[in-house]
Image 1 (tube, one colour):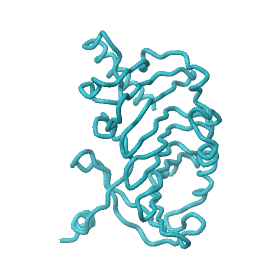
Image 2 (tube, one colour):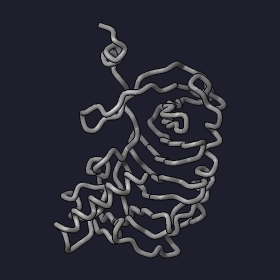
Image 3 (cartoon, helix red, strand yellow):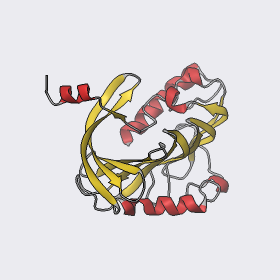
Length: 242
């Protein structure tokens, strides 16, 4: 987390040198920001108005249904293992997945697959470390969410519809109550505000998107944390088969 903050600060400092007339948003390529209004960045934070307080109980940011979901979703995956999934699922095996940056494969890893027995949906769970697991839940129509859990607590939640980001995007949830950043997507594009807060509760990232904006395409790092299937040929190559 400290390294991530340092990189952002260095990036913002460099951009402020070449774009002294305005702030730039640290998570996006500078050339993509011509139609974005940035009012806060890591070295230029501002006091947070009450309406944007980064609490799950803030109904300006989270509906009652979303509050309940975010506070309870970690319980659904409490105690899952590589071959034992959430209640109501059956283990279907281990498969390979990969993260990509454009066409470049960033990482290949294994996921445990669990099908739900009472409706057409699947959980794919990656055990990234002893402390961290990531879940991709999708129905047959491509609706669902990505969830990142650290030490059994919710660290990130991304909502998907028809296979693309659509709905709530929230990250770095502390004690299931206070978040680090917040946004909403519609059909893969961000709309309205992107908000981020520092440890003191100040807003240290704020941008207003006047038109639907392809955030994932223009992000400096991988923002959409969904993963791709590995083809049969790629699978054989990874496993050393001719």
